Length: 550
Image (tube, rainbow, N blue to C red; front, top):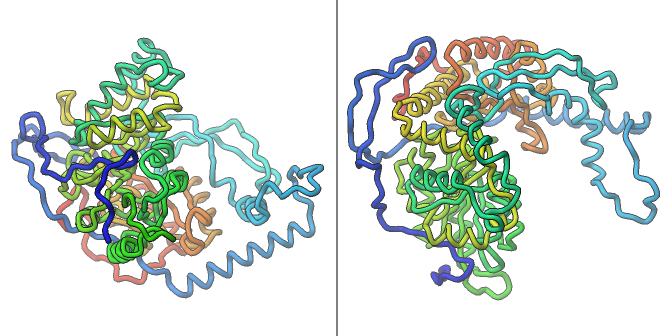
């Protein structure tokens, strides 16, 4: 029993034929680079070659937690919970209580309230730290203190400049100077700060029209539509494409925006193990055989939903294998490229280019402009028939305010630089710089004996610390050393997988990375972070080497 191939009002429009779209001249220019002062410098001798698809072998690491560490993590967490219950029993919490609510169901989950007050509060100073600068290679934090153990905070009036290893500034376009900032400021003078209405209500803006054309050209597809909010791009468009009677295969590590959009759609959701193609095929095959619940009718459509780079795991989707399953079972494919567009591929075209796949084989390409482009908003790209359908039926297109003109200009300028339309190789230099930084930083961390997750080419580097107390200790210690990172723990991650999430950028120099790595080496000893039981590499790590696996 297979999914019906009939296109109805909810159906997605895909194109499985061979793409006929190429670069303007059918060629691409490959530039040689040299490294100087930790930055990639453009070489004067370039050459022109035809682009070729290639089979890519990648390396991903997900080392198991040692038994002793697992036991101590559980004991530490339950001890923290016990002390919290004891604290709640003996002392009145300094929080507002609901009044005159007799007979009403509590507004808040009891465990969530307890967790926020007595577990999260102890490390609350490690999150939501205000910044007062552009989040570039360095960031300025506003200093604050607490006099009541995390219940409230006071600003001290001082600031701390830190190396920024916590922002999604992959290509370094978060800048206060340069063409992006100058042209965005000019867009405010020409068009104002916002349209304050959907495009369907009071019309669109020429910047948005040009941006949609450029986005489609950049991705190598027929058409694209842009939205003012990245989260809403997923949450508000998926319900327009799916409905009851549809089947969705969703990766267990998918982002919250995807999960919300799928739930709002009313479709049947089946979750498969993270990046596990055997499990995906097993779940897919069983769902097709059984059909819809109760009626056992064939599914109206089947959609596989994955991400390009998973922001908590640092892993890259196995796109070629998923495309094989998509063709085999006549399913549609939705790829969220929020973290890989601009950050993967020789020309920054994302995971599709990274694996040398045809963009027409992916039915729906989604991405955001907040990471590699230093702006805000999101896009959906694909066939013209799909985009025309979304312009009329998408909740984000009909009811949400259109993208702000300066935001659209920032994206347009940065995307033009990536594509080389500014007449320079600056975009390619940034893409290559990010790739060098990623490989170098990951290999150096492996030599330290710490456990890191993800793919060797992913700029998202989760460093596992496991214990809840160590998340706070690492974040505070690094802040004292003027390094800003993001700590992530339960419930955002499984209880056993507390981590420090490091995000690398093309704006980082080798000298900055070396200084950060020296600090990580020190705290790995003092805080006991060398959990890895694998043999450590002995070869020297060279900066600027990408062909270790390729």
